[in-house]
Length: 512
Image (cartoon, rainbow, N blue to C red; front, top):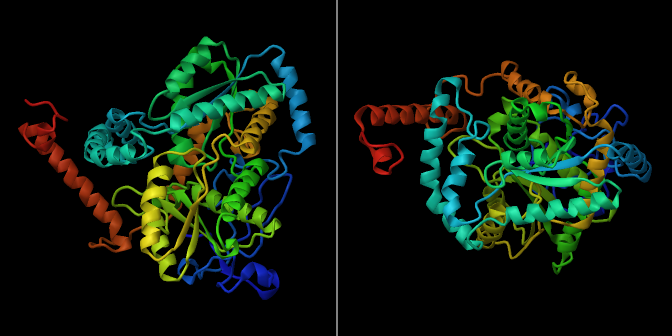
């Protein structure tokens, strides 16, 4: 769904900012830090009633955002001020006298050739943070991942073939790492920067081995996901924590983690700059609807497991639009979620459905903004640029534009460097308990605690389905998924016991 909204009072927004669309006011945001209380109240200009909620204004507090204080900056939108940076650099200079500093960038990874596609998909779906099976069925994780990867590989290969035969993600991330290294050296922090991918080369394990060979003694872990999610940053950090726990060298390494950074001033301004630039390419910039498209996550992650991703995404969009407001850019905007997989319900509205609805409502100018991505890859180059553009034109939208991913945009890279510099005085200085007191920095020893706290929300939330229902309704989807899982289990048992079936025919299981 879009940012939660309610009807705005006439005094809350000017005629120029609200235009002729239905106007709504987003909810008050939670307290962002112990030092600053910042609530954003402005006209959010959600363009159509189809995307608005009629629920009353709600405060996003600890019930919906467990450990919120551990996931936000202690000084949002002012964290890059000259005094903060200079103090941090002074502290960092002391650290660098006798320490070897490393920065580990974490990212998803992507297949670099068509032959890499199927094994990459297997690695992806074998991750229990991507497909969350009940404990009783966890032994099916790899067989299920193999089945899904083989089934999806042909279609995925077509997509990668259309963008040149492989993902550019590794090359872009390597370039970001190099630019970040240069920026840190310019700020008098002689750090080495490493890249660790979750599902393809260079794997996180490979990056860690290089870090050990280089003798790094202080490490800042920086996921390249602006907003925290269990399935992205959480998965990468869970793996990293396991690696650290099992290695004597790493156990003694001082480190800190920056879990999310979507509210940083440099990131927000860099995104606003790109949007402003692309709006200028339209004949009537003020008539363009800004369409934020974020990678989706299953709804259960948010409602049952307490994933803060949706709330952080909505806040991120609000902050970008507030920055544009300061520049007198008051376009209508909306937020939707893309890239869903499987039969379960994901965050809504879905991007394809939202585009179709906008076309029906008469929107002629649309600017797509890939809000959760900082690098070009399959979901921007093929899904947005090809599939969604084609859908938009078929739906009646006449003029389509797309904001590029940030890549190595200088303001963005400099802001990441500032985030690293600001974290250095805290490397190794934090205990492994009392998460909420740590504000924006989390040691790896607390990743399991952090994720377990999300998981514990299951005990506090009602079950999503209160009765067994069949069909294609929203409430039936959970039971449909459970029935499908039981069917898959039955087929696997049959295959294993008889030695016959499609898994044996495809060579996934060995013949008896």
